[in-house]
Length: 296
Image 1 (cartoon, rainbow, N blue to C red):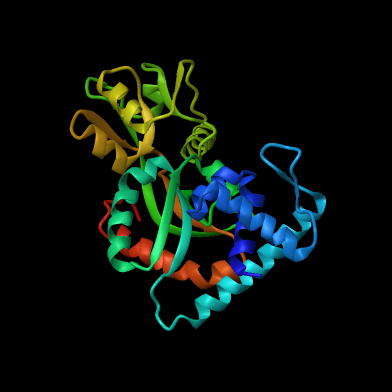
Image 2 (cartoon, helix red, strand yellow):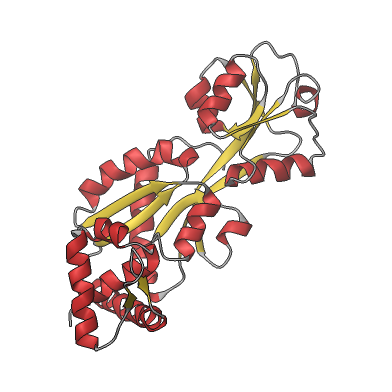
């Protein structure tokens, strides 16, 4: 009985898909099926109900997959502790929130190839809450997200960057702040269900800022371009406003109270993550040293 069979079983339980498991495990679909049939033969138990397409785990199969995860995690911890180097090794699934990933992800993948050549990274993007849930249920090993308490609750959350949020408005605007802008322009609100969107909504509530005309958009670049064309004003990370808007938009501080967002690394709280988390965080921090950030 090989550990790889348990790893495949755990992946199937997490992905609920033989096809997706084959992709993640770099196996053919038939190899996954044969490996699971061999595991059933060795255990003398039916782990899958093959009346369904794709096959579903039986109640016993679910319990065995849970036990297999304990074995797989323990084996991974054992391997990590026996590595004599501080270099990050292994395979990791990491999610990035798009608003940070646009600046972070390309540099990370480039530097990781040089600084952690024995590590394999599979990356994806998504909103903070969705990525945190994927970390929580085991679909991702880690995620780089906008830190919000609702999403990061019960996860290990470590700040990587603290970014200043600013008001951005059309160049022809004569308004001096959020209150005046809200009387003159529509408010371009980044998705309220996202990490940044929730920070913005909370800030507006705290500052008692109300706008009768709100346009919800799902792209920071789109919002900045709308500001360029005089369509409205927005609250966004300063680094992104500068990146997309340059000198074509007004950039005003959040007043009377400044606003910041934390870009954080989230992982599960378990013995396995305790081994590789510091190495991954160090790799990200080394990469982020060259990323333009604003604020203290």
